[in-house]
Length: 113
Image 1 (cartoon, rainbow, N blue to C red):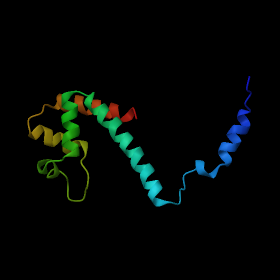
Image 2 (image 1 turned 90 degrees about the vertical axis):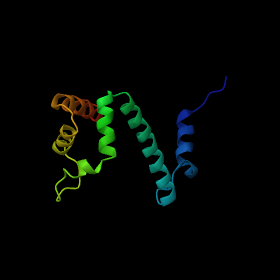
Image 3 (image 1 turned 180 degrees about the horizontal axis):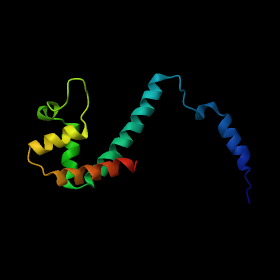
Image 4 (image 1 turned 60 degrees about the horizontal axis):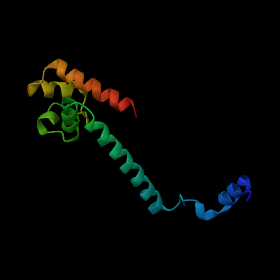
């Protein structure tokens, strides 16, 4: 029977510089960051597909903000607030409770991360 000294194997692995990523190499770091973002993007899209149709519509509206929504944003702001979104959705015929229910679902999903 072969016996292994796992502490020695781990120490050899740690000592081997080929097992490390050079954090000074911007190309390697960019590649690593891109891989992590791709994984997060896939997980995010999967979570969105599991949401109700209304919540998916709101996410789509936020990510692809139409000019009508952007018109609700004050000049001194550069982002969409819940209030701006609610005004826009009301303007296109959404009922308040439908909007609030979908927004609550989105908030819950975002907190789960």
